[in-house]
Length: 349
Image 1: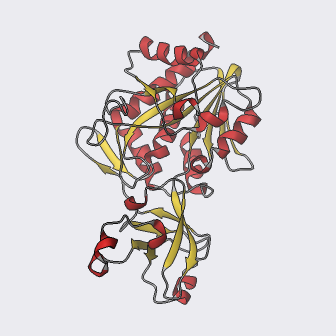
Image 2: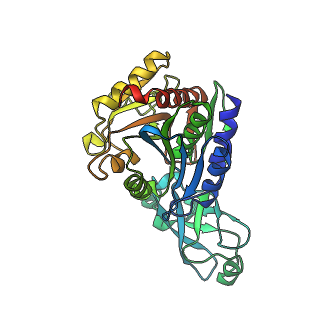
Image 3: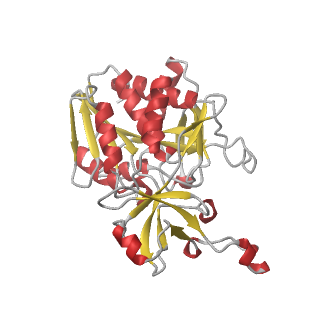
């Protein structure tokens, strides 16, 4: 599993919030060269790689953006106020190290600060600190220092986190949502042997409205599609079986429905395709019925007159935080399921 591990590390440690995915797009293009017939970037920024040409056609969507922050105000003392880009739980951000990405020049490191508890009143300490009360300290003495660094209103910001191996083939980093899905898509294309028309799409701006999936699916109009993304894994304090049955080390997650049906309700033929392939190759898998959260599949399946769409999920703990955690065994099995499913799509569609 060293190959897919190294790939995941390269993707997760790279930086690219919604709307600023250029660095990630370049990595994906570099990793796919030699495994696809053509690669291009559309007008919104989606990377589209094509392989094969036989009917039926399938679109694989893995979003390449990560949640992040953006400078919204530079104070006279040199501190940065910021807005969230994507869904953050405010308290996970406090005291994190960050990277500010000027349009020109080197990245600038900083920390997210707030009023220290020693100077808080009792009622303040008992409240959750909100994003609007936080700020970023890059070490600047004043606004002029910040300007000299190339930082301006609208400059994107990411979390400064590094890929770390834990025991039992588990790893942790920022942005596994959804660099894990991107790694699965790339690895599957390296393993697959198929003549069917496959479009591997690194979609943009998923975290802020499934935007890239919507436009790319409209253009490609495939016969069937799969979104590859993370799926919330339980098996830890605070989440019970009634909340989710998904756990680490139990294999890929095949979504039956998410967002209580407001997202995707996977068509039975797509479920038969994925479950049948997993059974044929003895790949353990999990089924998911979720009440919250959704993926690119929601936008894809409502495109044009409708596209049969499913989801393969990588079980992941602590998503939308700087310490997302997954199992490399699950990651490898997700890639295997996707590769084998692509080889047998003609039997189902």
